[in-house]
Length: 306
Ligand SMILES: [Zn+2]
Ligand SMILES: [Zn+2]
Image 1 (cartoon, rainbow, N blue to C red):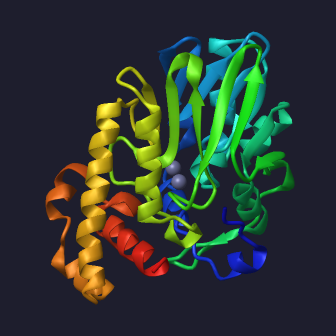
Image 2 (image 1 turned 120 degrees about the horizontal axis):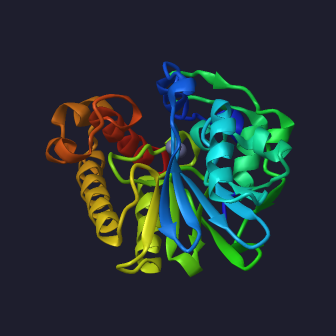
């Protein structure tokens, strides 16, 4: 268990402003919310930002992640088309703005916001970008998780539907929660897994490449061949997709670690371009999940936690 303190946060660097700034050019009025039926009254919603999962019980709804604040009304409308029941719980998989932006509005609608306690601490304290130094101010108090946990599992229930929340240590961040809906065989990974590109690896907020790989191994153990996996970003995936991503991460870690252990600097590792073949499939054209960004994140995660 790693409990962060406000003092630790002051010296902490955070990478998610890259995600936030990537959204600055977005016209939210043009975003459409697309729902995918995962079976057993469980749905995945895509719009702009992290994937959302919705599970409908007999007396309410559990929702995982909330995308950006300006999308609240559209997301609410899309959920109302699925069920007229109230959203009782909102779970945050981690603190990044593309997953928690709608917290305040859904809280105002009556939802209890649930997350790992490090999410609450980071949102309350505000954060600083590791690369640019850009500061993100503390969120308004009504956007904070109202129910948080530190260790073990946490179960939420809405009329017969159960969500099992579990924390994985120092993976994408230090406050990651993944969620299982056992009766639908749906596994929600948060940003530990993206089904299209390299992941962001927020080493400035306690994320590590080794922690991500361990988390992926935990997911692989929890999944079977019919599990529907909701990634942090990208379309619904299978266990086979997750296995491929895991193997890529292990290859990336091993190659970068070899260079790091040989004493190479970040610039030397960038010049060596050790992930060139992986970039073909996994690198985004630009931004935080591009080839160079991912390489820098893996390197810095090794350096940060040596
Ligand atoms: Zn995200
Ligand atoms: Zn994230």
